[in-house]
Length: 142
Image (cartoon, rainbow, N blue to C red; front, side, top):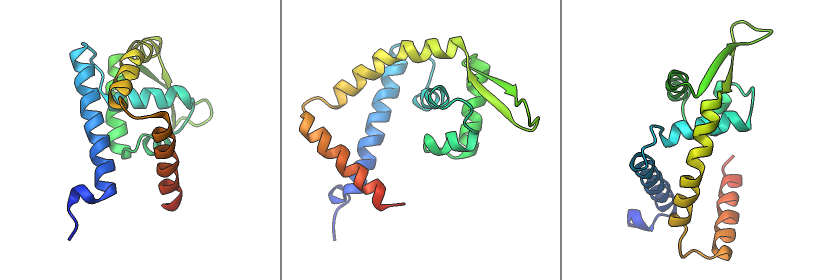
């Protein structure tokens, strides 16, 4: 019987979780009061203005209830604003505030540093191969 550490998908998940824990620890140590998940949601909204909340949840690999909680916290922190949709009053538009844009910009250098640390010693060729391999796995699992 194979061991967990021999299963590629276990290793991929372990790598992702290790990186997220590392990144969260770095955010906290640097004095930021934002989580990795909160950063992802703000970034998703910035890159996809007007995207419905359910699609944001899918984009950041979270369930809708989790994204609802994250959005509520981000609104309370002043990083997002909620506005009533122009044509459908049942919907709301989420917009990143100036404070939200500032926190994304402020955290970006730390994000870049975290990525450099995590990818240290991995060649550009290995990264390209890994990217192609992961893309193929994603394509194989519609």
